[in-house]
Every structure is written in C-alpha cells, then in structure tokens.
Image (cartoon, rainbow, N blue to C red; front, side, top):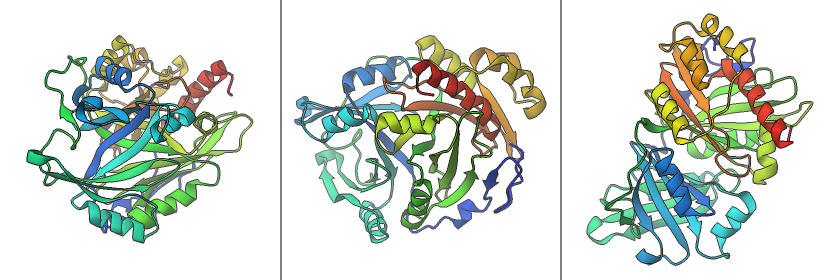
Length: 389
C-alpha cells in the first residue's frame, strides 16, 4: 500500500486513510481488548477437537451437564491472548439450536474486556444500543464475582462487556477447569486477535459505521471503495472502525455492484444475515505457523505464480524469501509505516461463510490493500468451484 497517511486524503487506488483515527475515537467507553469470541456451533466437542488438534488451542474450561448447565455445552479454548468459546445446544429447541439451524456455525459474541460492565452497558444503551443482557453479577464462590452485560451489533452478533477485576476463576462461574487437557498441536505462535471483519447487506455499511462511532465512540481508520476492492467480476466496499487505543479494529464490508456475485454476497446468501466473516489472528512467525497449520490439515487459499513474480518489486525485502512465500501461499504488502504478511484459510465449516486470517505485522497498520485484487481473484476461483460466482 502506497497511500499517503493524511487525514481525509485519498490515493488513486481508492483507499482513504485517517491517520488521526485513534485520537478521534472517544474515551467514554474504555475497552481493554477482546476478552473472548464465542462461536455457536452444531457440535462443540468436535469443534474443540478441531481447534486443539489443528490450531494448537488448549481446552482450559468446560460447562455442560456435568457442571449443572442443562441447555448447552461449552468449551473454552485458549492460545496466548486468544480465547475462543465453542458452544453447542443440548436439544433441538432454544436460541442456540435455532441460530445454528439458520446460520450454520458462526460467531455469536465478540466480547470486550472492560473495567466496569455496568457503566459500559449504561453508556452504550443511552446512545442507542439494543440491550441483550442487563448488568449482572455472577457469583463464583471462592473465585469471586464476574460482572457482565451485553448489547447487540450487526445481525445477531452481540458484544458482551466482561469485568474480571474481582474474578479469579479459569473463565466464568458455571465453568470448571479442565485439569488434564489433551495435548494441543505444537509449533504455533498465534498471539492475539488483530481484527474482526463483519459483512453486512448492501446499504448497511454506513449505518454500522455510524453505530460504532455514535454508540461505542469508535473512529474510522480506513475506507476502501470499490475502485480498490474489485476484480473483473465483482467488487465490495469496506470501512475500518477502531477504538481509541487501537486494540479493537472492525472492518465492515458491504457488496458492490459487479458482473457476478461478490464474496460478500455469497456470505450473506449462506449465512442469511449480517455476520462476522473472518477473524485475523496475529503471529510473530507466520512462516513457521502456516507451515505447521498446513501440516496439521488446515486449508488455505492459493495464490497464482504471477502474483509472486512481481512481489519483490512491489514490497521489497520483507524478511522472507519470495520462494518461501510462494511455497506457503503467504501474501505481502507494504505502506509507509512498514510491511505485513498475511494468509487466509478456506471456510472452516460446511457453508462458505467464516474463515480465519493469519497476519504478521512489521509497522504497517493496514490490511493488505495491495493484495486485494489477487486475493479476490483467488476467492472467485473458489466461488466458481462451488457454483456461486
């Protein structure tokens, strides 16, 4: 990416970057980061095995019949600062089963770590957020008290506010610690959640940009229009929202008109609602991590040889030989702040909806705009194979 990072400036490629976004974000809602992401899935036990055996997550806590929970089964999976909760229904009735029946496996909750769950709920609902869970104190006995509340976001996604200051248990009351977890896959260094991407219907992007600005105090970091995110057949538009400390980054995508169906529209057609399309996991060693993930059986999108023929001229030295990047399918991009390396998995469930991104940053705060055309062409190859282009 060769954008000039000046507020409101637009380069010829159609990317608009706001260098002052972090300063503009309001501080009435201090967010310490992503506490956890909860997926509602068809089979939580099998999903936990997938994340353990392929992705190297350790199961640290469990809730279900054995802990007095009658309607669901949940496994808490952790790797460094990434916590994923996998929840499945124990009967064909109820909101979890209905959610999975309609959407397939998908993200239900992107939870924020906060110092005060009550204040967070009060501030957001006063600004127009839909209340999902009113502030509640969950008594964990000797482990203390966990405080929680939640509000709605796009589609059926919610944002919980989690206050752990007076709680010292493994995850939350009602969960028990898994004392002897099965060994997780090794050789991986996934450190934290870098960003979470939401797909919304045509015409909804600006509505949710305004929502995160007005309700959460976020500011717009980047705007990509359909001049930069396009191929011969399809296009989309995206705006990236961030909070003041930069720990929360939410790109929001909507489809744009094109000759054929965009990947955003394919997501909407199969998820049947606005929802979370992918989550980027940050690593400090993408080569070793991707090599191990491939060996474990994780499937990634492939990039054509032509992409790598001109990559060195475009991005310069990125610390990894071009031949290695091509071998593993890793993409690279550079802007005036530095460079990044990234790669995208294929969808991780039956429906062509949710996938993961692995990203390694060296100064760059961007999202790989220089890779968009090649990446979207690779996605369209996958869409064509599914008969959805």
